[in-house]
Each structure stands twice: as structure tokens, then as C-alpha cells.
Length: 107
Image (cartoon, rainbow, N blue to C red):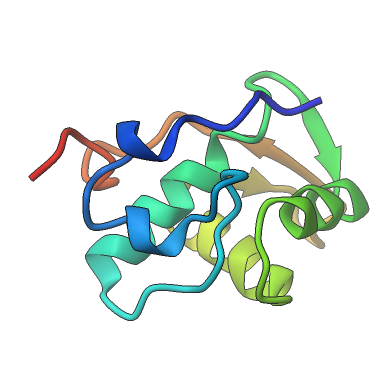
């Protein structure tokens, strides 16, 4: 089970307009810096040390966003190294966020 959402007030200011009151990503930001913040937020929904099947990744992403493009989100999480996966995409696991994830303190 993924952790409870953070209060919107604790999120970076630029990310807040994209997150609803339940902590779900309501829409995908257009700026890459904010996209990386959104990906970092989604990555927190995955338990460190746990391996997920692709179906579980999809279900978790469906739960935490509202614009019906879990494939885009899964690809971004892997491309930006928030998640790693086996060749073929059968299993996924959370990585430590990269230093340039953009999820830091309020700007």
C-alpha cells in the first residue's frame, strides 16, 4: 500500500496547481522542471525495496493521477530514473531520486 498523500501546502509552489485535494496528479505540467517534480511525487507512491509487476505499476499510477495516461507516467518514471525495470518491463522497482529531480523546497 502506498503512503498517504502529502498536504498540498508542503509541495513545491510550482507543482501545487497540478495536484488535487486528494494528492492525485490532476494534469501533466508543460514545463519539464515541473514534470520532474510531478514524477518525483509519483515516485513516492512506490515502496522502496519492493518489486512491482507492470500491472501493479499501472494500477498504482491510475490511482494517483486523473488524466488517464499511465503509460506516459511509467515511461517518464523510468526515463528519469525514479523507477528501474527489467528488460522486457516485467518487473519494476523504485530508485533513489536523482539529485536534479526538482522536488526540493519552495522556490
